[in-house]
Length: 463
Image 1 (cartoon, rainbow, N blue to C red):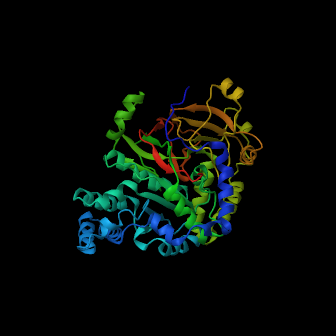
Image 2: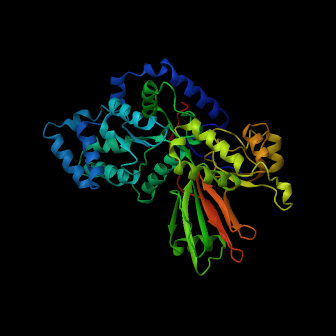
Image 3: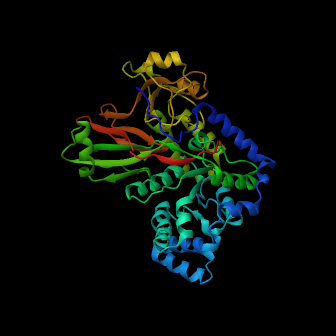
């Protein structure tokens, strides 16, 4: 299977983890201080009237309010036209203040100091969709009225997301609506890693953890957001079709949809949709998995929700996660106990990084690739890598990169069919958001995965 070439190219996979570690180290010391605050503001800050207009539109959820605020703020001195050349590349930052332990709120304050309060949005207050609908909508309205400054801002705008993989996926998913609504260009996205795994941040050169010297490092993140080149990231839609019923505790990554919305997909793929069916759709950027690892993630999320005081940051989260894994029997129930069971977890992977920077697919040699009919994996090649993890010991050796995972296939589209029996449920997760999937013995539950027709645009932090 040959891979279609696209430009601009995603960063090469193998060096990305090493680069991310180096970036984390660089940010801990004096390197972040090389960015002058005044120069940074010249690079990324919008004119006053424009940023206040965007903030007003988002707060009121009405683009007309933003337009009125711009007219009132700008006055008659033509401030917007004078400052149109000031912001080299305007940058808006979304902050998940609940990520990164205590760092989320502190980071938000630091960003207010460095750029402006109006260009920083707390995701616990403002949804990304609100900014896209009303903030960008306000700039588009001003541009339609002949405001060249607003037109330039809308065209050159970039977005930074301070959060984990789930937060980044949330923002990327909202941005894809711009393609559907024909409101291009779509702003490219960079990452300030605040999560536990940060595999998206690692894959695009933004580092694997929030640096110790973060106050000076933030200036470097913002400067790089303005100046670095962009690249593409494949996104994948997962459709869950199940007999009449519902998924309880539905994760944010998955949305219930009408069966009629899934009918066209079923007809294209030859899937029979039950007369009474429940359908769900979601988009993932890193991975989808079924099995024991998703069960562990499900238990970890519940434990963290029940006892939030235990999860005070990425290190504490990883310790809790590891401890919970040992209590779930993954290490005590080998696959040989069930002869028909060859793996206890199936993983569909889009990125090179998985599980906090591990590389379970591995760096495969050309001879092996040719023998298996594989191609070198990239995050924008239109292909997913499918591998399996056996019992917990096998998974541990894979994550320690002592051995490779059980390679199964590469695919441009995937269909899983599941039925109950001894088990009346399966555990599934997408980009770290798990759920408990009900199963029936008499009827199949289908999960179909297909590539979204338009890519996500990422800022390449490696450069």
